[in-house]
Length: 226
Ligand SMILES: [Zn+2]
Image 1: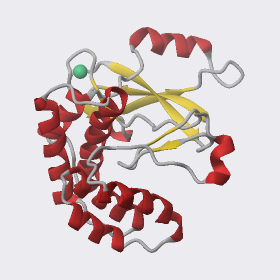
Image 2: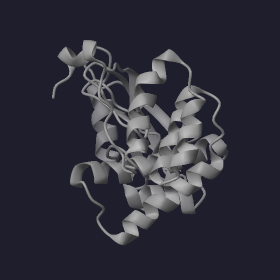
Image 3: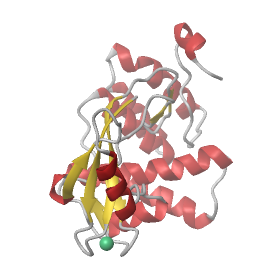
Image 4: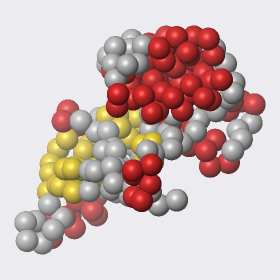
């Protein structure tokens, strides 16, 4: 993973400064893939694109509209005085947690369907991360939130590409709509997605609803850490 400049953002409500790290490149070596479409790996990091202001709690996008400056941390390219100046004024922009994603959705901070999809999927991923870690839900309320989030996602996704049909099948499987999930899987013919589609198919036949980690192809096993 290669990082670039540090970007300075300003909260549009109270003016508090926060810092964001730009990420120039990532790779998927030793990455783990999950049935909800999420990927994690030692050399992979999703650029933080939305935050909650540490001073006034406003949820806002880390986008050019809220950007006020940019500097480099490294001494050969950057000026340590500028870096120290900004680090004294603001911390790294925090990533949203489950409550943060819920607020972003309920306050409708999205401006288009793509952003709404991103927020709903991020909330689903955060909930699934909890489940993968604990192998159960925290409460019946959390399970209900998970199901509601999946229903909302199913209403807005418009699958065209194989990975989107894979996600649709996953969401239908999560809700126990196994017949529909199989129909969505039937739309996938792209070789690159057949291994994942097969594993999802097996889970559907077992009437298993929960998120799981995809097994990597055998020729990649030697790269896999577990
Ligand atoms: Zn603020």
